Length: 304
Image 1 (tube, rainbow, N blue to C red):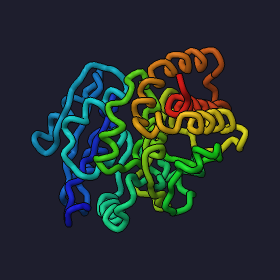
Image 2 (cartoon, rainbow, N blue to C red; image 1 turned 30 degrees about the horizontal axis):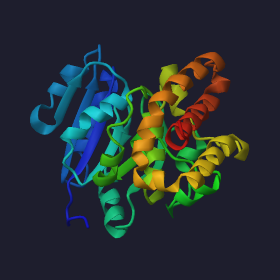
Image 3 (tube, helix red, strand yellow; image 1 turned 90 degrees about the horizontal axis):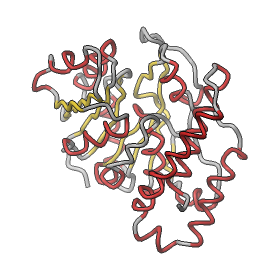
Image 4 (cartoon, one colour; image 1 turned 90 degrees about the vertical axis):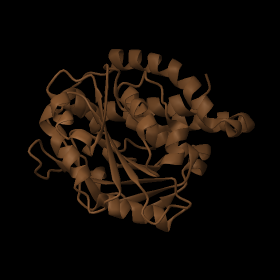
């Protein structure tokens, strides 16, 4: 059970986002909920991010590391986390002022829930509302236990990216450290690992602003909300379902051991596949997002 006013950790990952970073930090520090610690992990930025972070002094915890990708940034932040609830925030996004107040209330009212994922408001580089991915703000509020759907090979609902992800620390500690071969789209790994391990809650109100700006490497990984139909899910979930039926005791005994063993090999093969088969054009961005998602499913759920 959570305490009456549990400490919430906001973990911000940053790489070369000096122009947006202060907005992200300020949105975490300026919450209506007061029991908050803010951790900023800088993943070897080459811009002026370090100076921005250091300007906050002891108002935040800071971690500076050599560049290793998003997964390594989450791993580096793990030892610093002391909150009972952990909310992730990309350095180019922002929280709405009452996000943590609402998230804490949700966790307190549903002790059986291990994770809360919520809707997002798409904004442009200047912070003005736009609509890029309709699914970001249009999913149904509901308690979800996706473990049964996974075992049955069913199509899963939309799961949002980093700045909409909130976890009990107890489940995040089972997922992290994650394979550092996942330099991008680590949020997919976190989402799907959490869904594999416990019950969660999808909240239909937008509690973060999700910034769409000009870096195509960012955009290709961030526009991932449009379903491509049931056939898209057929192979990963069907293979996973068969493996679960064949090896239920092995999975039940140590599910995250299988996640981490399979991930190291699968990431190498998937990166080669993407480089051969994906062309980064505006028409292929959604397809790339879902390709990365399906790769993460195979990482998490298929045998070596």
